[in-house]
Image 1 (cartoon, helix red, strand yellow):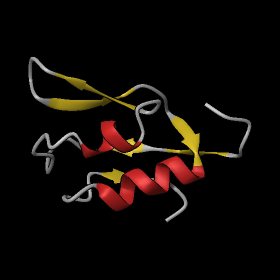
Image 2 (cartoon, rainbow, N blue to C red; image 1 turned 120 degrees about the vertical axis):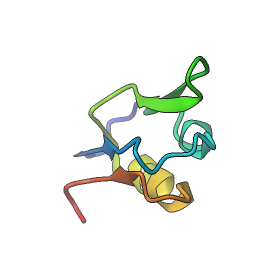
Image 3 (tube, rainbow, N blue to C red; image 1 turned 90 degrees about the vertical axis):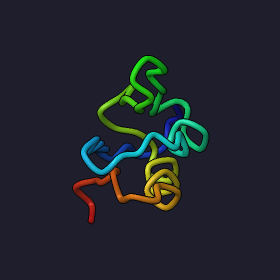
Image 4 (cartoon, rainbow, N blue to C red; image 1 turned 30 degrees about the vertical axis):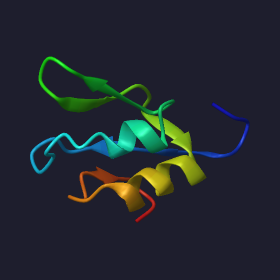
Length: 68
């Protein structure tokens, strides 16, 4: 992670279809559990630019933050 301001990040797996975009664009924040083909959070907060990029790339709006 970086020394940039951190914001909270939340992951809702209900609408998730396991595309893995979040883990690709923000690997410090998201990992993929291959046994269930779903992402998981590695941290409760992250740099704003990484969180916002993951939100933008998620096709099912599974990622949110308190800042919205």
